[in-house]
Length: 115
Length: 118
Image (cartoon, rainbow over all chains, first blue to last red; front, side):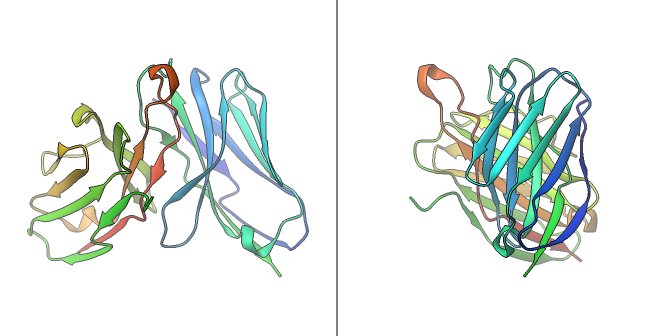
């Protein structure tokens, strides 16, 4: 059974710093990996999706990398801002991806950016 | 587009009562997912539908849980009877079918229903 772990569970940094969130998964036979953002009391918003054949994806100040063989992904946030404060969740989709299989989520990293 | 709509947003009930959570997916999406989020277990997939047909319900914790999708624009998740350990935030998500019939993998989440069972 796939297990996804995110480290750290919580992180607080001053505004402007670059930071890295980590995600690891136990079964490297994944179809893709996604990073989501969750704001308090709200649903999830997809930030980046990396297919298993890709190494990284970028969107603005966000960069996500994937090392499938070692079962790891990182989310890099450049020049952090208070508006980046949220919980960041990593999720993997297993198998061949032929069907719309549900995602396996980590428990998230709760990020606070201090003004 | 209004996005995925869930109701109610908050539900407080007593143990033993029936609870029904509702979801309206984004129009035109072929897939609908129900997830549950708790502090202890994080986000877990309960069940998902494709074109109103349940495909995988292996995540449904017990027979007390049931889900239906009578049409493409409505789904319900029912708990009967409810127990305090069912307290959680329940999310509904939908996803379109991509180009060439392949699933796009981008799931759009609703705001969730926070359920408290006393």
